Amino acid sequence: MLGCAIELAQQAGKLLADNFGKELKVDKKSRHDIKLEMDRRCDEIIIKGIGKHFPSHAILSEEAGASAADSPYEWIVDPLDGTVNYSRAIPHFCTSIALRKEGRMVLGVVYDPMRSELFTAEHGKGASVTDARGSSTRLAVSAARELRDSVLSCGFTKDVETVKRGAEALPVLAGRVRKMRITGSAALDLAYVACGRFDAYFQYGIHLWDVAASSLMVEEAGGKCEVLRELKPYCYDYMASNGAVQDELRPLITK
Ligand code: IPD
Image (cartoon, rainbow, N blue to C red; front, side, top):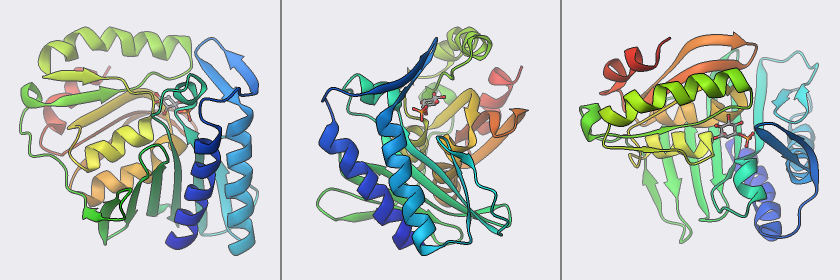
């Protein structure tokens, strides 16, 4: 199953890389979001591939929603995380595929086609990153003990009210951490927490498909993930960190 997830993430990633910077068809635009034909095309590759190898498994994807299959196995797919970046030829986006069994995340794959970085995690077996030269490193979260030494990343969702809440939290946080970052790809941000590039991540109103695969990476790398509040099905106020700064960060973003 891990092999299948890797193969499909890389196939979708290749399509994204081949079309990067080219003229793109926009399916839909809203106040704070954009949907591209490329989201759908990548989704089709992944959903078809899963269906071919595991026809009885359920699939939840950002683009197609939830399948009707009744199975202990459920794949959770974000074919293009960082669509706005991709639409502006900003080379920071990825494909994310997770699998949960009976409600527990068992594997996660995040592929960044611009850097050819492949992040993987399996429950109980750790997480790793393989770089463009094919060299693999086991993931471990950072050693930062306090927010004052931390790089904190955050994201903004699509709806106006939640964007406002996020913006209100920033001034306090910016004064407490060493640096803040807003990169536009939650799945990559969390993979970066897992490998120690970032110390923590938070977002009001994040969706399950954005964080499913890389939350497992954070946990397998020794960090912590937490749903602070469920706003609606598959949508949460959420934080993740190296574990050490979790208690210091939580009260600053819980409201
Ligand atoms: C978006 C990215 C972004 C996060 C947004 C997501 P998408 O995913 O993960 O970082 O802040 O909430 O919607 O829509 O590009 O797959």
